[in-house]
Amino acid sequence: MADAGAGSADSAGPAFDPGLPYRCSPSVALRPEPFGALVYHFGTRKLSFLKTPELVAVVSGLENHPDVHAAIEAAGVEEAQRPAYLKALAGLAANGTILARETQ
Amino acid sequence: MKLVDHFQYGLNSPICLTWELTYACNLACVHCLSSSGRRDPNELSTAEAKAVIDELQRMQVFYINIGGGEPTVRPDFWELLDYSIDHNVGVKFSTNGIKLDKKRSAQLARTDYVDVQISLDGATAAVNDHVRGPGSYDTAIRALENLAEAGFGQPKISVVMTRQNVDQLDEFKSIADKYNAQLRITRLRPSGRGADVWDELHPLPSQQKQMYDWLVARGDQVLTGDSFFHLSAFGEALPGLNLCGAGRVVCLIDPVGDVYACPFAIHENFLAGNLRSPGGFKEIWEHSELFTELRQPQTGGACASCMHYDSCQGGCMAAKFFTGLPLDGPDPECVRGFGEQALAARDADLTVPKSDVNHSRSAPRNSRTPKAPVMLQLTTRPDKACETSPLVAAEADTRLSPAAARA
View (spheres, chains in turn cyan, green):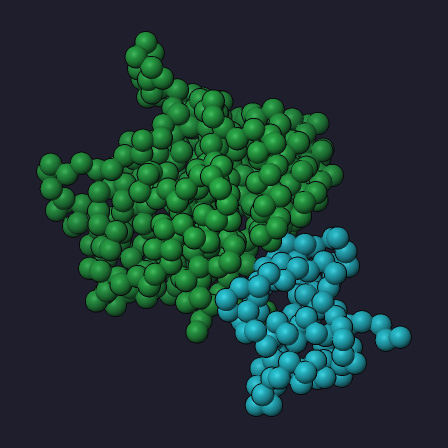
């Protein structure tokens, strides 16, 4: 489980591109909490916190959508909130919680 | 609502769970917060311990802090370590190093999801052994050498700050660097045998400021288990969770399965239940009367009007309790001096609460056991606490725990 997600966490990986398809890292587990979810990365052993239920929905839904924008829309995030969500997701990509996925 | 505000109402599962596997210890540190020494005949069996791990896995407790006593003296320690890791419950264990020979160090270096924390309370043998007992400095250093030689990721060196070692902070950092370890410093609490030596060992007010300044300068390289949040009233908040996590994000499972609000609060007033009872640990975490109460908003009491209340939150519950101070008043080490005033104002006939749980070898086991003098020669009981800095949002990461490179 200590896979590539771990290694890339602190290094400069590919830039986050919300126009691409993403998914949760297989090394990551989400634990539901009253505020949203706690994220644990088994590779880097870091905890993160998803502070809203909508962000949890976005992260969980990434793999079912063709790109990040579609996942944000499907989660019902208000348009005005999109920049904040993109910023949070960029952080999650940088720490290896979410990964760009290969398109079929 | 900020994350820290959510934390005060409690989480679905703990994020900083300490599990003392045994009260047995080869050392007898004067400040042992669990008054360890002798094994309790009623300690959880191997099968019971595995059932606890199964439950923690179901509750998605992703890692635990194992301590004691000296956990590695339990014959099934290595079996439980492997079992836990195999069940996605990572382990950080605190040890005085007694069992970390070359063979075990090599074994640990091959194991994922395990983190090792060596207790060291002096940067020199003289200072360390005064508190932890003769030979304990050499034992700790030998363990660090063995781990380094085996190529073990990055162990932690955990230091309880005392009046004698505050001036050694830079030396501790040098030792950590020498062995490719990460330094962790925590606060001395008047818990367990620590109550007996607190007056003598707790840092002086000037040393509190010294620690704070040192942490502000180097906080990013040093772990603290967030145990110095009472110092945040000096100025800028220290990194980490500036909130007492007891019963909210933190708890302790003791060797016989008693669940307490925090590792520093082994006393019946902070006992939430025993996990051998129906419903097990989950029932206690979710529904015990004590934890429910601890998750109510705190008023701040006598501290509520203080301009620093938001940063120190009144300090450490255990430190107040075991010095006989009211829980809604100032911490005994309040940086504004209100704690000292409160200590001085205690009633002469006040009985300071003392834990009824004592496995010290110096304590009478029964009427025929003579009481031995308090000097010790061995011990451990690593202090613990959590290392969390869980403040940030999605991009937040914490130092919660076992990490190859951090934690």
